[in-house]
Amino acid sequence: MRDDREVTAPAILFLCLGNICRSPLAEGAARAAFADAGIAATLDSAGTGDWHVGRPPDPRALAEARRRGVDISDLRARQLAPGDFTRFDLILAADAENLRAARALAPADATARLMLMLDLVPGRAGDSVTDPYYGADDGFAETWGDVSAVAAALVADATGSSG
Image (cartoon, rainbow, N blue to C red; front, side, top):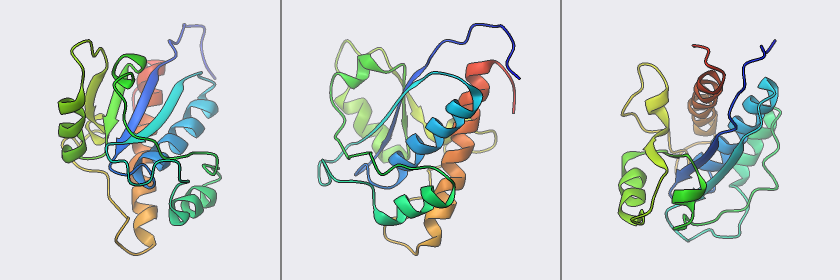
């Protein structure tokens, strides 16, 4: 049960390369976690690349989210934009390559904090979220585990609770 403390609605962008696997799964996991906690949040996802713009998440990502009771079928891939750096409080990259790309694209007036998704998870700082795109379908379950841990850490941070 939530207490009476005011919880500021965070604005978080999840970032990966093509915005069809890791970042939409992260957005879906976070939407579910914030909803379960009764916290309003602005959540979105994007890719540093433009290959999949306008497309839905990978069918394997859709299936994994569905297995977890989360519907991400309404999401469409988009590319990271300059306005994202002021629209969001936090931009969380799936890996160091996408974090570097985001930092290189950040405009001078950027206000968002940029970091790796797994930097929020104890014992995982510096790790990359598992990229399941070229692997077997079970890689999507591993990715879900990663992004669910990130979502839980974000909710804990938003509510001021630990672990």
